[in-house]
Amino acid sequence: MVKLLESKGVRVFSLSENTKAVDAFSCWRNDTPYIFLNTFKSAERSRFDAAHELGHLVLHKHGGPRPTRAAEQEANSFASSFLMPSADVNARIPYVSALDQLVTAKRHWRVSVAALTYRIHKLGKISDWQYRHLCIQMSKRGYMDAEPNSIEREESVVWKKVFSDLWTLKVTKADIAKSLFLPADEIENLVFGLTSPPVPPEALTKGRPSLKVI
Image (tube, rainbow, N blue to C red; front, side, top):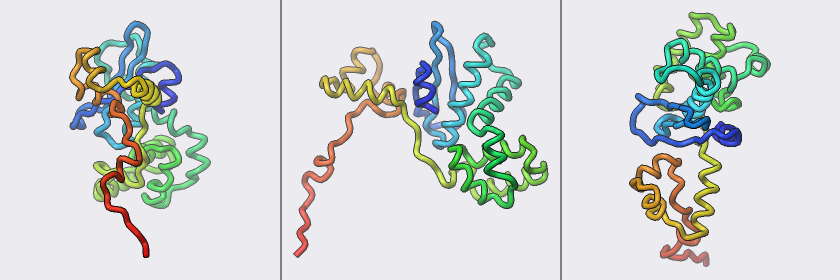
């Protein structure tokens, strides 16, 4: 999702906020779209948030500063359909036998088990009673707080390339912070923690005692 958004000109930033109160937000500035994702969320939920904010950018560009309940529902519907197309879901999940089936299946669409359960309910593949039962199971298993069968977190491709070029020019995080008049930690929180150059493999083993097999 992040790579797709950036390829279409969306500026994607991260929000390393230790809170679940803010999922994400988006805005238009001088005809340029921006999306901010809370990395405190699971990788799957952050991915859904990205699709949700894309829905706002596409559907509600001329709306007010505070999205209405209807607008939020429209963005959720957009994200569900975008990430889990009905034809694909119907083909891969002809019926639902157990929650574990959805825990396995969700990795195909790289979404949370809660999002997939909601989607198949909206598609009429399970009844209201079955949906409530699955939600109770997810809650008992702790899936609302810790995502099962998780995926790797998506990162910005653009920012990674930008900072790779800066490292070759010997530009440090402190240099970047100074030029932008921002605290270094704040910049780090906005760009998925990519401002520090990767540690070379040889540095990881430096100082460790060598092991000889006799």
